[in-house]
Image (cartoon, rainbow, N blue to C red; front, side, top):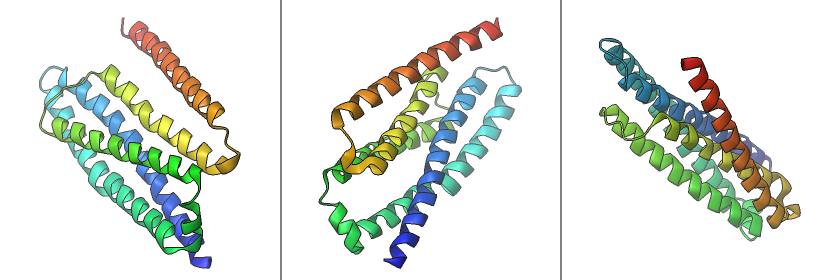
Length: 184
């Protein structure tokens, strides 16, 4: 059981760095899209710098963190007695569902990363700002689920995630108005 706590600690550390990478990479996407709209030579200077920053963040922090968080989670779930018992619990199934959604989110971020590295701008900055909230919603859902486990009331949880998402959207619209007001 002693080594389980080490595994859990390492898992949590890499989950935190994985989310940090996901939060920051999408912010860099916003900057790259904004840079694409600037005049030369500012456009080329900024794009080059953001590509370097994105590349380093993605391949030195985000991907390794995702892989290591997954390895330690797999180790805890399948090679410890506690993990084996957790696999029988409904809250763990729901958590693993959210983790699957997180992998899909990560995969889509990778696709966007590759497009921007090739100077293909397919999304707006507003889309990216909203996209950035996807990881936040997943994080909230997983943390509440893990902390509350069986005491978690699924109806209130779904309502809570929905209300949290609405608050994020309202905050986004409010911030967009402030940004537009400051630009004029």
